[in-house]
Length: 83
Image 1 (cartoon, helix red, strand yellow):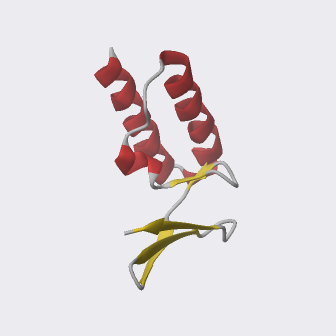
Image 2 (cartoon, one colour; image 1 turned 60 degrees about the vertical axis):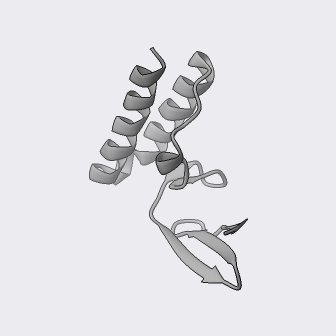
């Protein structure tokens, strides 16, 4: 059951790349699936989710002094992680 839900979330991410006009809706569906079934969103998908604009986006990655910065190309928000 858990792997099926993770597969569905990954498929939503793939569809968001193909059809960017529906990416906000696919984001909502992925979050709803994960919370309803108590399944974590796969890390490969989670890195491309913007929490500010609620969208699957391509992110710009910058490595600066051991700090990894992901910036959303839609809303320009920046997420910093230690690398």
